[in-house]
Each structure stands twice: as structure tokens, then as C-alpha cells.
Length: 258
Image (cartoon, rainbow, N blue to C red; front, side):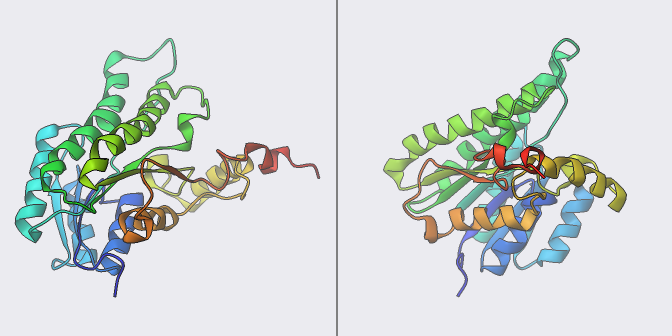
């Protein structure tokens, strides 16, 4: 038996990176999945990989509450229920102080904060006792990365929102937790060649105690834990999967003596 047998999951941003890795893992553990994303081509490719019996793709904009409602309705219409919401969709963006347009700053917050809230709100009428809501934070919420004010603020907001939603939904027996990835091999970095990835990893790994980037599948396994009954007494938690970058930054290679 799989850990998610008989369950239905909505995964926003499920057409690439961590979201797609989670969709693969959830399906392998017995779930039906509804994935959303902006790109119709990658959504179609993902469903072909996952299988039409197990997956449904809905083209949706994570920043649009109407799109969230459409995705939730499609999940319930196709599979008859909704047990797991993995509000994973998010965008990055450079917002340096002194040269950032209002529209650029607001777009990051609209997708990463407002979109997440309204995804959960759209799903709420269909979530029953025992359901799991999973949000996606980032180690960058507390890392002070220059030029990343909007992104850091958005992910700090996700951590705060996790606690509020957990408090609101505890009486319904619905759990809300936050996966906090560190640097992970996903398309968000914009790398398309082995040379580019090697250069990025060589630089980034120096600040990660485990001396490497994470793999999407490693983050997906944390999401699976939170989606399953294995985490039945975990509520309102931030669970880091960052190779120690947040908890033990001084253990990173850059600080080690030869």
C-alpha cells in the first residue's frame, strides 16, 4: 500500500521542479494529482509522464484567485474529493533597493503570498478532517540576500501565514505546515547547460554545510511526509530541507579551515 492511497492532491506549480517531483512521488504512493502551471506545454508533458488516469493538468495563474477556484473545482469534478493542497507555485525576482519598479515588487508578493492564501481559501470547502495543507517557504526568508527584498518578504510571510492557518484550521482537524527548501536544482535558477549548473553549484555549495545543492526529489519527500498520516501530529511547523544552510551556517565549507 502507498502512503497516499485513495487521496487526491492539488499541487500548484506542478509542471516543473519541486512541484513535478512531488507529483511523481505522490502518484507513486497512490494519490491522484491535479497540477497547475502557466505553461500549457509543460503541463501536457507532465500529465503524459504521470498518466492520464492519475493526473489532471489545469492551466492557471497562481496570482489569480479565479484560477485557484477553477483548479479546485476541476480536482473535485474529476476525482470526487480533495485531501491535500500543496501550494508550491512561486516566482523569484530581483528587487534591489533604489531601482525597483512597484509592479515588479508587487508581482512577487501577488504570486508568492496572495496567491497562496487564495489557493487554500478556494480549497477549504472541500477539505475534511485529516486533510493536509503544505506551503512552500525558503531559506532566503532569513538569509539577508542583497536584492531579494520582495522574495524574502514573501517567504517570511509564508512562515507567518502557516501559523495563522494552522490555528484557524485546527478545529477542523486540518494540518498546515511549511516546507522550507534551500538552494535546489530547479528551473528557478535559469540554468540550461551542465557548465552553468557546475558553476552555480560550485559557488552556492560553499555556503551550504552539506556542500551541495538539494535535489527536487529530496524536497518532495518532505512534502510527502507532511501529506501523509506519518505527520499526523505535526501542525504549524516550518520544516527545513536546506543542507544546514539555515540552522548551521558556520558549518559551511567557506568557513572551514584547511
